[in-house]
Length: 357
Image (tube, rainbow, N blue to C red; front, side):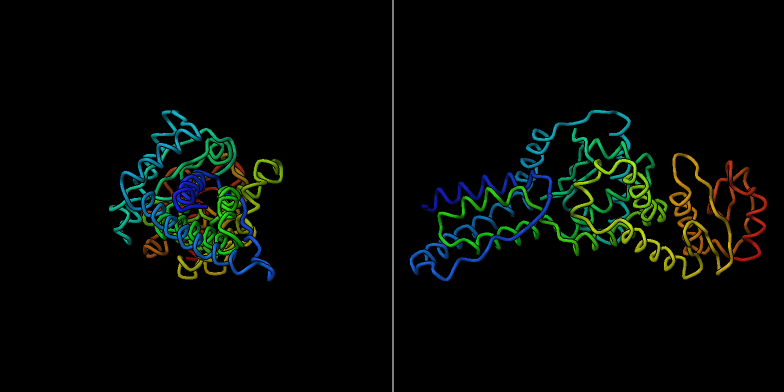
C-alpha cells in the first residue's frame, strides 16, 4: 500500500471514528512468529506513516477551528438534529452554567468553547468527541426530566472534553491496532474495525465522574443529583433493561458510581451527612426518610435532600437556625426539603434539624 492510499485510509477511518458512538474495545493480536522479515519491515514503515497521519488528523479535528466545525457539521448530518425549542433552551442554559462552573477552576474551557446539539438517536446517551463537540441523544430525555440530573450527564461529558479523553482514547486504540498489523496492507482493514469500537476507558469514566461533581457544584446545581441520576437509572433499568443495555455494557457499574458520589457528598458536608438506604442522618442522628414524589423513587429523592444538606454544611448555612418557608425546610439560605404527601411536616423536620445539626 503506498503512502497516499494509506493516508486516505487513515483520514476516512478517523473521521468515522470521531462520529461513531463508542461501544467496546479489544486489541488486535500481535503478528505471529512466522511473519517474514519483509512483512514486519512493511508493517513498521506503514505503521509509522499511519501514526504520523493519525496525529495530524486528530490535531486538525481537535485543535483547529476549521476542523472542529467540519466535524461538528458531520455529526449533525450523521445523527440528525432535534429542534425542540424547550429542550434546546434548557441545553443552552445548562451548558452556559457548566462552562461558568468549569471556568472557575479551568480557564481553558473558554479557549475552546463547546459545540453542542441534541441529536435524534433514541437510546439513553450523550457523548463528547474531538474538538469539544458534544451531543445529547433525544432518548436521554425519556429517562431524565430533572435539570440537575441532566446537568450531571453533561458535566461528565465535559469532563471527558477537559481532559482530552477522546483524543487520548483514539490515539491509544489506533496505535495499538496499527502495532498489531503484520503487514502494511492490513492497516486499512484495522481502520475499518477500529471505527466502531469504544475508546474511553473505565479509568477515564471515573475521572469524568469526579470532575462532574465539582463542575455541577460550582455551577449551582444540587450535588446530590450526581448520586440521584444513577439511582434513577438503576430504578428504571429494572423495568426497561433493553433501553440501557448498550450504555451499561461499557461504563462502570451504576451502584458503584452512585456509592462513590454518596461518599463525595459525605465529604462535601465535612462528614456531617449520610444516607443509609434512603434514611438521611445528620451527625449520626436520623433526620428524615423522604417519600417517593415528583416522579422520583424514595431513594432517588433522598440523594437530593442529602445534597441540599451537604451544600448547607459546605457553605456554612448550618451556623444558622432551621425554619420553615411554607412546606419547605430551610437551613439558613439553603432549601433542604419541600415536604409533600408521605413526608413528615416541615415544622417537625425543622425542629428536629435544629436539635441535631
